[in-house]
Length: 348
Ligand SMILES: NC(=O)c1ccc[n+]([C@@H]2O[C@H](COP(=O)([O-])OP(=O)(O)OC[C@H]3O[C@@H](n4cnc5c(N)ncnc54)[C@H](O)[C@@H]3O)[C@@H](O)[C@H]2O)c1
Image (tube, rainbow, N blue to C red; front, side, top):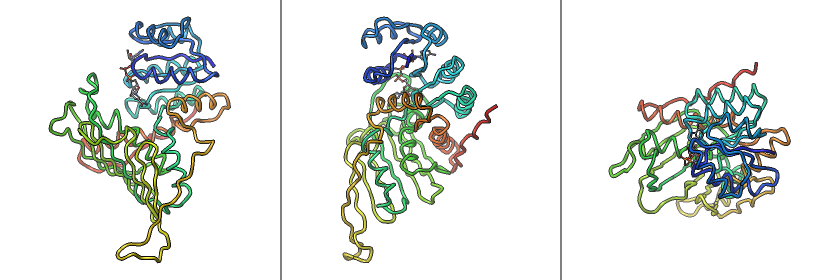
């Protein structure tokens, strides 16, 4: 399949490295507002004879791709995806799906109207640790899940746009944890209360930390504690997770370690406590798509070929984006907010 990529900034390297591993994908064009960046990426990845362009229209017209890889900044995503769908391409976009819920809904609508696939890179789902934790939850060994808890603490100095933007942690980063939480919970939360701060000493202009409590339609809760200006003792980029069920608890360090304990014999007591014992966490299964961007690109290409929807298809991803915008609304109003997933658009 012929693929063109637009947005040759930092993230494009992960995409082009992944595409290079996949025989079924041929990169036929690269574009960036700064054409020099597109040219450098072509050299870096040995793509000597691909089309080089500085806008989406020229890229599509000259390279005639089957699919577009969209790695532009969020504000440019809406226009780029609409143009590609109109040209008959399937589209795989970087996260977030859109810069507003209205734009997200429009993209879902345009995708259905064009009978094409549009999916989002939610690469945190494509990690061995989260796949195994998901299998453990699905196995029922923890019982009914009553709480999912995610901690995210880092102190990166990015420079650039992130240090100036509003709601930086919620908009730019928390979508990964929120989407992972939806995957683990198997449901989309129905409400959120979020307290956002910019802690003393922060080098970000606004919103570098957030604490959010989501309620789940199953009766459980999801809590998120995050900061982008927490020096020392960092968590994984994937967060650090605790999942509590009515029979046991699992912990995922965000990397490879998933450990769990559950009740040994519900009647057995040791002083104040019920007796628990470590349990096996299921191994990876051959159906588990893994390898981050590579896993996602592979899954997307297969979905196009087989005419099925990939796991991070855009109409499903609306729920993760709605969590982000719900948390932002709560932070701005100081109130608990119902998470509104934009209605499924009608297909004409
Ligand atoms: N999945 C992840 O783990 C992850 C990590 C970091 C960033 N991202 C996402 O990747 C995307 C890109 O981030 P980045 O860090 O590479 O940013 P970046 O600023 O390094 O690169 C973005 C590039 O897009 C180009 N661009 C912007 N508007 C364009 C347009 N209309 N037409 C053509 N080119 C255009 C810019 O010139 C720039 O080169 C963002 O959506 C970001 O949220 C994802």
